Amino acid sequence: AQSVAQPEDQVNVAEGNPLTVKCTYSVSGNPYLFWYVQYPNRGLQFLLKYITGDNLVKGSYGFEAEFNKSQTSFHLKKPSALVSDSALYFCAVRGDNYGQNFVFGPGTRLSVLP
Amino acid sequence: KAGVTQTPRYLIKTRGQQVTLSCSPISGHRSVSWYQQTPGQGLQFLFEYFSETQRNKGNFPGRFSGRQFSNSRSEMNVSTLELGDSALYLCASSFDRVAYEQYFGPGTRLTVT
Image (cartoon, rainbow over all chains, first blue to last red; front, side, top):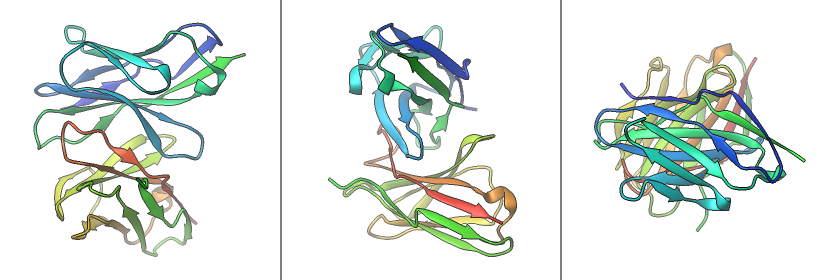
């Protein structure tokens, strides 16, 4: 069975500091990994994905994520946080066969303090 | 390109009633998925449609159903509403299945009283 864990409910970081939001996963077959962000009263916005290739993936708004196969992790990072990055972040995984659907993690609330 | 649109945005229904939610995917997208989002349970997968066929179904009772039309537009229906069905219902579309990211609509906020 597929699953996604986001071990931190809440992450607080000062503006200008680097941020990391953690994600680990379990999936049958090869993983396709995604990060989404949700602002209040809005749907989810796609940030980036890992399908294959380079383990460091760059996405929207200066975010990047590092795929680590041995640790089954896909942590989201940003070198310098902005107050406007404060939102709810979801990691998602899907296995590489047509019988599997997207599975989302529980979400991590990021607060960037001015 | 226009994004995913969902109608209505807000809905208030009474227990026992039924409701139909609509989703129009991004033009050219053939896969549509539905999710239920609640504070306690997070994002729960309801079902996925591709080329008018249900491809996957989540662990929800039969009161939850859906369909996809030939133009890829999708509807979901909830019959005999319960208080616990109050949630944000999100629709997402993608070009194809598996390796493609999903793009989400703004959601329909359903309140059951």
